[in-house]
Image (cartoon, rainbow, N blue to C red):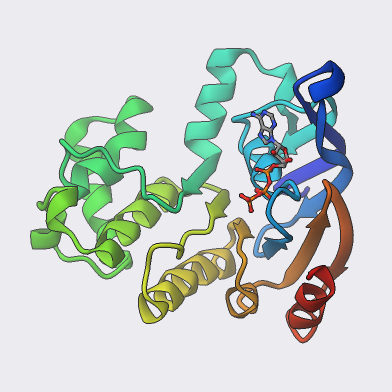
Length: 239
Ligand SMILES: Nc1ncnc2c1ncn2[C@@H]1O[C@H](COP(=O)(O)OP(=O)(O)OP(=O)(O)O)[C@@H](O)[C@H]1O
């Protein structure tokens, strides 16, 4: 079973004269162990696709399945539970809670899911260690961390509790290139360990970490390739 499946998914934003076909008739399947990069010009539908994949938005038609469950069949509560347990997000701006320490931020999804604070904190420290942050750094607040450290915390939070689907929207956007590569390595490793990953990126070198690249234009998949011998070529085609 695919971890993520989009079946003929269309998403129209707005209506009447203002309707925008953000995503049109899109099919996509991502298996466990696979990292797929989404590339395409601004406005081509990348974020729309990612939001649909994570159940943050619903399609106008077609179906989104996570681990075999059609998201549209879930009520709000069940959808929220599935998102917490199965889906991890990494955003460009980290989205850390400023009043919580790094470890508390990483533990948050587990605590929201009903795990005891102590156990969640233990797992959070292990998850932080996995991304290269020690206990001392785990006790710092977001504004005491560098950009790279904050993004590691965001990744630890996205991966904690064995989430099977990891969605990353330009996760390296605010980082220098060395730190950015490290973040991608972590994502790659997690996929090698069995997660399915979807990475939105403008950078062909970053897409090089993926097993496949899906290229969007005007809400449609225009090409899908193995990496990235071809991504540079695809990008050139888009200009
Ligand atoms: N909430 C919304 N209401 C109306 N139009 C929207 C909304 N969200 C996205 N759009 C439109 O849908 C299209 C696809 O947008 P989307 O953000 O998915 O593209 P993108 O490829 O992620 O762009 P970027 O690289 O600039 O982030 C664009 O034309 C955008 O203006």
